[in-house]
Image (cartoon, rainbow, N blue to C red; front, side, top):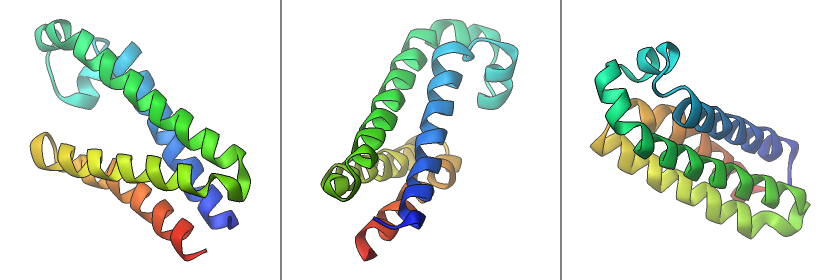
Length: 118
């Protein structure tokens, strides 16, 4: 596994930990409300759903950490989790907000390409 793959995967991990924090803990706080562009009422009624999304983002980060911890033996695990993130990012970009393509799918795509060509 190349240093480029490790760095790109670490960026994806960091993003998903950030998403976890935003969705699980800051969704209905001023920073979360500004970040996602919703109002207090929407944040209140959707908080449980956002927390669930945040938890899933944490699982994705954990899977990537697991894959990295196995060095070259974790390539299949990284391929699986990066692919899941890409698919989720494409779906989110189509159904929710196009920014998701840039902030979720694209970094995972770069990490996956780096992994596959190494």
